[in-house]
Image 1 (tube, helix red, strand yellow):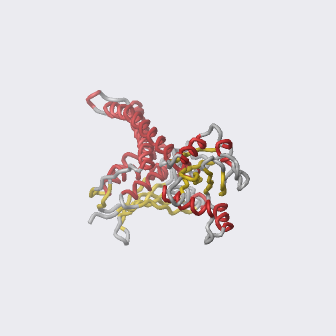
Image 2 (cartoon, helix red, strand yellow):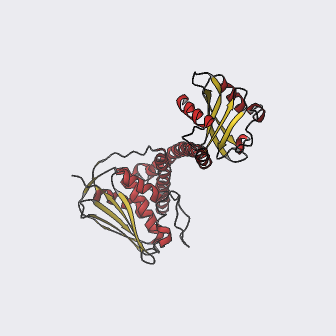
Image 3 (cartoon, rainbow, N blue to C red):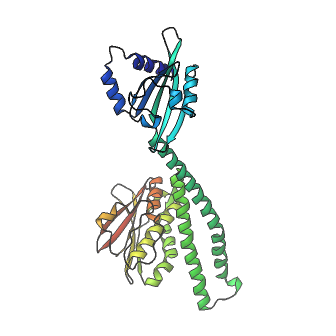
Length: 365
């Protein structure tokens, strides 16, 4: 940086003949930087650049005035004194009046013998960089909060599910039909809530770049059967027909992640399918050798203008008479999980005909 300041000082203070002054000023007027120079008494000898106002300077009008008067009782004056003593230093400041942030480097001006003949400062507008850093810090803080909250929610929820499942065991005595129905509702609702909590936890991992999957060879047909058994209570109140068409097929994937994706896709399909409708699940091998699981509903379909947003975080496609909206995380998380396993989740839809979501996974060699 000292070498850079030396070059800048030679160019600006002397304005050598090989560099046209108007050309240099044109550069300074259009680049997001400010340069000002001052002599050993603090008298400004040069000032130019885009954004001089936050420094109480405007192009050329303060030449001949003292920086110690203009910047009286401010950190800028202290930095100027350090530059005149031979130090190179840097400061960062925000100017509320203009809503911008600046990083300024100060250093001494020296002649050919090395004697200090003044000081120079180069200020760069770093507003966008600081905004990006703050946004990243806020995102990380949000992710930590969501992760902590999700862990706190999962502990009592797992206890509720565990005790409800114990009530189903014959060892604790028979249940009446009504009691059995209540216990099934507790378990079904608890599992659905646990799935939502897992979504929140995993999306916080995505934001923090810590989403992990553990790949292994999986029997997809067996995994689909398990998920369908779990999802049936959610479809029962709407009297939906659940159809499964699968073949024996293995793929490389994370069992928990695939289960979570299928639960998200099936929950959406059930939500959007009208009463007494049909939800179909199919497992096949693609022409490229991938395993493909499709989930098809006979709902209203997704309008063209909303299709590009369905995989966005917190995006929701809400239509009349659908019931309460979800978190808006399911499809976004499903795509992240699928891509982490080397696959993807895609959509085909027709308004008035329904939608098909396809989970593609690399096949097991």
